[in-house]
Image 1 (cartoon, rainbow, N blue to C red):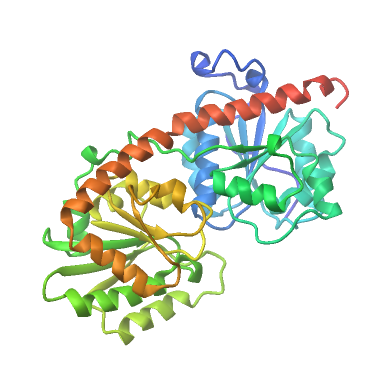
Image 2: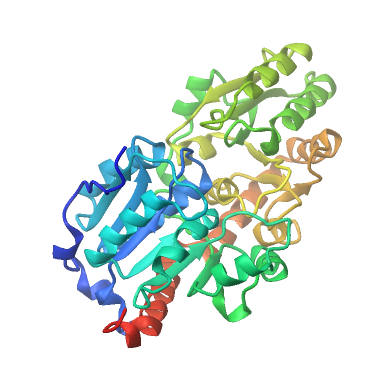
Length: 420
């Protein structure tokens, strides 16, 4: 369990842009980027998927990107095959557990990587800032970007956080709602917070390319069955129990008119104490829903899953945004989501989807019944949802804005490049 990084993949210092014509000419400093992306997580959810996807998009331009990940974690395992797509992507696995403050192992790793040319650090975990900022405080030529993925519920304007956040060049968020939350609770100025919408690959999330029959056959449902799905890790905060309770009411009220199938896609949070899946399975038995509610586990092919659903549900207690919601919308699947977090930005005034109160099975049952009984509404809402996502959540726009943030940070730090 040493503290020095063991890179896998090509040496990024020797990499040169593979597609120089794709780099915007107005970004004068981006060509000298040597980025380190930090995501030291044992999970594989929205945060981790966004971190990996963003790093890959930057690396595909030929810009050197190193990715610090926990050895043998899901993040590490998903990164390794991607190196073939982007030769300038370098995976740096670490075998130690990082503390949130003054971690000496991380100090050694960062020192080695900065000495090797890293000039910008982008962490997707703000909890690690206490173990990043102290070690780069005097490295004035090294830019620091952080992405905040979740809502914050307590005041961070104390002396410690003021010092930590004063070193950040930009704090990125994925919605205006999250930006407001950050400005209300963090010691940071509006000029240092940038909203960068999530982005999807619309060549992959293209309904015309996906045939749902195969997936539905695997689930054991025919065309006449309405499949209502919840996609996300198995966790009390994700609302699976509320979903099952709503399913019980709908089966009792509508089973004589409709064939209903309720699908829970996902696995339990990695590293959690466990037991919630068993609780949910017991709840299914309690309501005698074994023939109506199925657990399918983790699914890799998200576009196919979303296309095979008739209705997507995200009844989380609170989501800063909810990547899976826009993935469903991109596949023309009508959505029902919790009215917390950034719901208004996702579904507008319910033109692109419906909202429900979290932990309210009766409200979820009511909104599901609206869509179950109105097939034309499902179809029109699905099409409007895709148009909304196409307009606002393109990965090309996200990449452009990310590069702009990087370029600005590098330019801001360039006066210090001789004495950093």
